[in-house]
Length: 314
Ligand code: AFP
Image 1: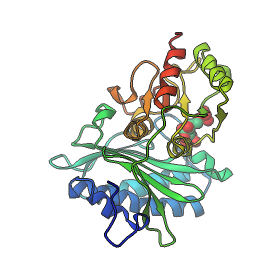
Image 2 (image 1 turned 30 degrees about the vertical axis):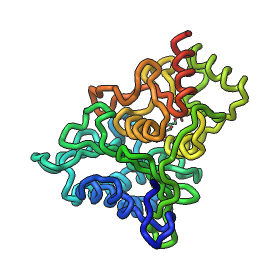
Image 3 (image 1 turned 90 degrees about the horizontal axis):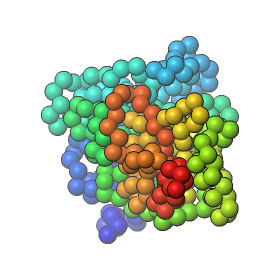
């Protein structure tokens, strides 16, 4: 039964009220609202901030942009002061940041503060991706997430979250409030768009054959180079597949398990889709390190299953 406030249309239901309908504890409601609040400062940084380099690099050796560092600082400060977080991991930080040693009733958060930041200077959409676990351990299987969300900074600012009870989209209004715009989003069994990441001349035969299969059935290529907008398109249209496969020279692809794959796989599976490495569900990976990467095929169940068939030469 869709949730809405008596006397209010569904589209006036704000984030905190919707979270209260999700049968979760107040600390988690507070944490998700704090992350949503932090995104307002990230938006301001994206729209007006310095597009230059920060003169530093992240744990992958990638040059950090000033926006990466600023967005990371905004998110980390908010999480530290939330009072409900014990450990923090950021794609922009080398190590786990311990906020509190005693984890009773607290959460650990892994986030990518500004995924796709290199797209800001060409004015393409970017986003913040967040993964939430109970307790202190951030190297748990993705299936143990208790919540995942992303904020998409595009023509509109939207926030999509799940606490395991459906996937819901909120859109920021003129007062910078998030109001409900889609509830219980569902994926179709199969779709007609595909989003192929990475250099095609480094694709393995199975992936190349899968692309040919998709094109033969009339699928359209939709790829922006931003993980958040590309996944958002598949999720909101409810059809299609995003893939960033193993490449020649990069057997684990490019995308990070903790910061990108686990939260998106949690959201897509909760919307009735699937997410696989090509040999196992993304959410079943037991991460060994913060910077672990994996290939990904994510979207409609039938499309992901077909990708797995091709990748395994069937
Ligand atoms: P940046 O954060 O370095 O811009 O990379 C974005 C990203 O991690 C992810 O958002 C995209 O899906 C992926 O990289 C695009 O990678 P390719 O440019 O190799 O396709």
